[in-house]
Image (tube, rainbow, N blue to C red):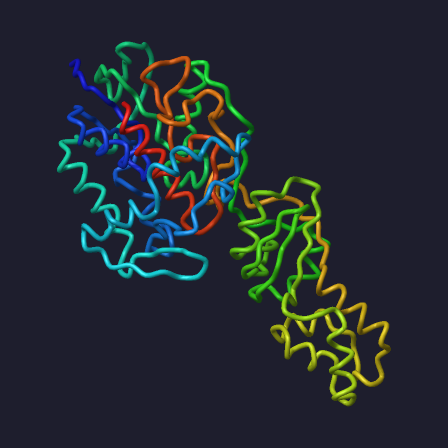
Length: 387
């Protein structure tokens, strides 16, 4: 059977659903296809199940891309305020957490339901659990899915990247883009925990499970948030953030006492010379961490040089991770379809009229904290307004 549509969107995630109902509102006949049996699968697990759906601090400098200017157009034309208006239209209660992050009061299911309601209102058809077997041709495009032939004036690539394969990530958008001759940038896991080599892991195992506020730095890039010591290395928001900058062989500098100076133990020694050094250090960091990093003995019997060295190390703990936990634990994929191949205004391929690429499939990756959702909404809106 051959069916014809104006727009076929591949992927029923955040970007794909946004593109679909935006196009549907313009009177386009739109079909969405997804191999998952659940629309918005990654939305449902985001933000601990409450969906960190945007960030009010969204700005182009919060995104990584080979072309840092590419995201400006889409982000300026569909803002966090625009998406928040949609959330409030559907009477979804929300709250702001730290660093401009907006979450649902209830459940991420509300965001998925909202997107599906908007699709239904715009006349969008959604088919889930579908095997997309072939995408080819132009004017019209020919999509083969579950043996059925679909013809479309426009195709939107919105199947995401390679992160979290258990949620269905396959790299399909990248494969299709390559078939149409679009350039790709290097891809790698982003917003992902870092791992340690066995010797470093043996030293830090005693404090696995400890979390503390830190400033973490690679080169000139730094983030100040919480860090979590794990049985494999490091995680927590600060580490996920810096992982998008880190490359194999890079040293990571960690300030574990961001609110103190390196000589803080000297003043505490003078005030309480009979206290154990680990006791003084425990006042500034979790007990197990203090036990691991503090010199043995009483403060009054410990040289100023040793205390200064301890403080300096805690202010600039230098480690070299041996890798990451990979796409299985990565929240996003860094890199993807080269932005040079796309129009920044419409997300349409410059050399393949009618072919669009949006969301995580493209070489635009946001910081942790709702930025990647805002890119999904903004890029989806751009494509849906043009397809």
